[in-house]
Amino acid sequence: MNKQTILIVEDDVEIAELVTLYLEAADYQVKWFDDGIGAVEWAQKNKPNLILLDLDLPVKQGLDVCKEVRCFSDIPIIMTTAKVEEIDRLVGLDIGADDYVCKPYSIKELVARVKVNLRRMKKFEPQSQLSGLVVDKKSFKITYKSNCIELTAIEFALFNLLYTNPNHIYSRSKIMDLVYQDYRDVSDRTVDSHIRNMRKKFKALSIENDVIRSIYGAGYKFEPL
Image (cartoon, rainbow, N blue to C red; front, side, top):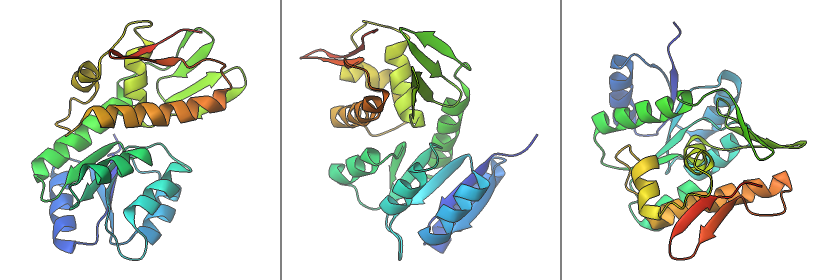
């Protein structure tokens, strides 16, 4: 069985070597870049299973790397950074990161988050359909008529919760309990950020009404077409 590949983009050699050591001990294959320039090209050619991406990189910043990767792939991206302000976390999530870890972090916890994100990629059934939407739970693609969009792993986990329980209203706190179960430091604004990203993508499906509805003072629900 082929090992899953983790791409590390980290300019701190000591951190990169330590994370590599722990990931290899967990039976992952690891590729490391100390800058974002070569990492994007390598990721596009080699299609790693997950990316650990430092936010503060020389020459090309982590946010730019994340944006470029999202142009061709929806693989899980875990950002690592010394910036702890909430706005920094939300910026990372807004441009497509699936997880966010602040330095200094526990290497064991980081490996645990890697495993959780990779499990999330595997746990969905191949395909289901409801109200005209075709939801491919393996590739995270959603099709409506001739239009198709792709969600990130965390976006799909959130969508799948609402989609498989149509018309059920989930509060933000309940969503955090059910979707963000991997030691993540999240807030109501994190949930709102992911919902906002999903709605932007759903516009490309040319659906007249929002399938993800906001219920004032209560939360969110999936509303069948």
